Length: 209
Image (cartoon, rainbow, N blue to C red; front, side, top):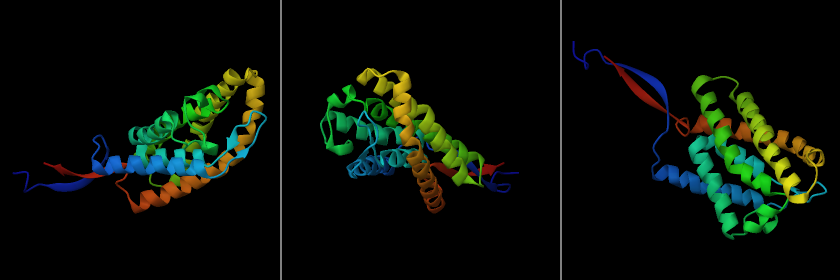
């Protein structure tokens, strides 16, 4: 019996592995989104002057939408451009000098966080069809704590000569805002993935002989 006579169509989830022009466009768009989020005036929240901004919302949304590779590329592009001199970091800052300041750990953490939450989002999309908002929120929250806050605390301690304990206490003020931003990122990501189901994980037809 030939394949054409016994073809049975189905669907299989396959992670995107090759980038095309659309992928490059998405990387540029989300890099611009992160940059735009940094332009919204932040609030200096602790004694070290690290501001509360909307950047973490944009970073998490980027990872949740684009996955690990493209998410890292988008936020990495934003970071590189900022370090190269474009005034796209919070409060209009730019240049390599920011790596000597208290915000250095957070800046370094952003591309890593986008990759980690992007990988977790891929797992969620591939393995679950219910309560995705909750899973996305959990992924963003875990990533925030493990990556962003950990590296942020390390950056404060290294660049201000504060103790790890002092840096940890200073970082705690960001948690309530992160919860709210992660809720928003999860809700937006669910809506966008519903509208564009192939954006992160491609559904491909499988032919069974």
